[in-house]
Length: 288
Image (cartoon, rainbow, N blue to C red):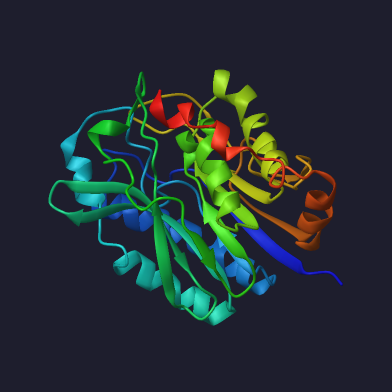
């Protein structure tokens, strides 16, 4: 018997740039740009929808400007409550990546998970924070402190891994061990070396752990930073590591795919990676 899930990913470009509006105006414009895609997903029967990394702001990390701290908010908070109305309206789980303010000086790159009845289930905080040319994230985000939670939603057990996290197989394995059937990776990544890694690492995680992944990247060039071109190419990959649905490189898009979660059991019955793990031999991984 199948266990079909219809899932959606939204990749979106920035409608107005810094200098063309205040930070609240930029945030509101980004939310307004997403709403038609969220509505479309709901009308098309999407059951689990994921948005891109810090979906309602630019990717402001190429600079180091404290004014962007203003865009952070509580989670749950105004934006998650706003999107909870759409989740409830369409009986659709929504993963909402957002800039979180826990308290003054405690800021995180976070993804909230809202269930199909509009209930807030919890959040994941990005664990691996880069600090390299063009990606000055340690200026903006504390490292996550919530581990690798898996959320029991109305349709599947889902986990979240955010952007730079994808370069680390350890958390991807932890999500599988914690029971994830689908792992979503909302990202903001530009052309260059990472474009090769974009189609390499996440299929490898999916195959190594026997779960589905939904991988989201924004599109376009964001001023005034001009870090490079966000190349979209959002995709779904199955537990065999095969990409089976992919969005374009250069346009705003809602990508929708149907897939059968029973494939997880089928794949894991062949590739017994969890049975054959040897955790007692891995001690050096946490000592080094």
